[in-house]
Length: 528
Image (cartoon, rainbow, N blue to C red; front, top):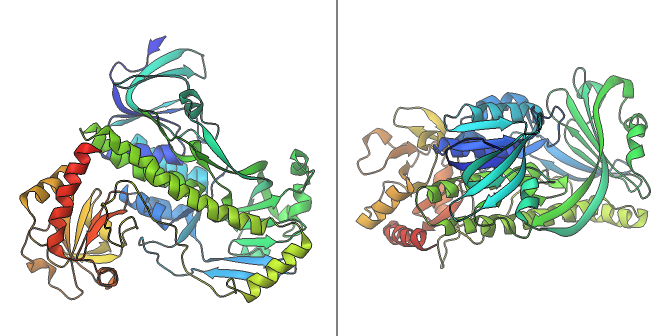
């Protein structure tokens, strides 16, 4: 047995998919020594996930990747639900909209292309290294760290790697989860579907295929069609009782109802079981799980990969604080925050799945009538609103209404006259947003900001002279669109403390109250 690396690294990540790669970049940005271990020597060449939302794009923006990723995505114009007769049951129109995180509400993408961008960024970080072709076969945890035993998939030799923390981002079959003995709970949703990925020559419109995602709620065979990005398209066909793997041989028959099979090139057909699962425990002392390793959900909301990205964004800054000396108990808030959120999103996806997967014609007819005549009447619109955080590393009671929600991001103008989204002016990390000039803070409050590495940001009303503002703000910007003025006013907030994952730690209605919040936060960091 050889030692893979004689020194102890801060974090070992098992799995180099989108969640693992994003986490590696976030940790690398913090300067943490990080080793990524991946069994496969190359990127999987076939698409799996196809959707991410504006919150995930904000994370990519924070890593400086948004402009590289935009060309390999397609912004979603909207969604349609139709019944077997082609009647419109529900439509969601998001064309041209900018969501609360500063980006289009939803994007479709080709996963291998996205993974290449994410991997290249992670590998380019000075403190990140990658071990491809290595599989995890053992974990030995103690009070100081974890010894990983890795096997080379080529020659079978084993090596050890020592890390202070381990994060398993190694998918649904997660060896990390199995070796660590972490259980996963079945939420009682299990439906088999045939997923067909294909490419087209020319455009989707030329083949008279739908130009936006379509859910065909047909009790004879519920089907999803997705124009992904570029030449890529996808069908998902629900399998009926008694059907199984043999349906992969009937792809031409299934797609013929939509398009001439000779006009497309099928690049993959696979039978998947759409599960609803969530981990009972997300960590031991020094081993944590993220992404599909700790939760899986039906794809009806397109939130599977998004959930993994939220895990990475939530966990990275907490690991950074702990590795710099804050209490290890801060990592307990990872599951406290993410597990309820994931369960809520899974619940919404399962409920939507039960509606879509209806096979009884009478039940389907009643559903159709209700969706057409009731709350789901066509013409609805807007980005989907997901729940905020309810517990964890948040300001204590009594809480401001913004606590646990996502801070908005909009266009602002800096002192140099440039206009950009707020995060591009502020940079990553904690940010204390002031509605106007910053108020004086106590010495302990200023020490708290320094301990967090937080920046004070003064957001001035449109038309203000940002160049001439006196005071102690690190960043001064003008709210050119009035978005922040509305946000502060609607929520009666004078100051808002935003975490690195864009969640609001807490807010105050009076500027003078912020010192007390910051002082209490320091005591909490020391005791959690």
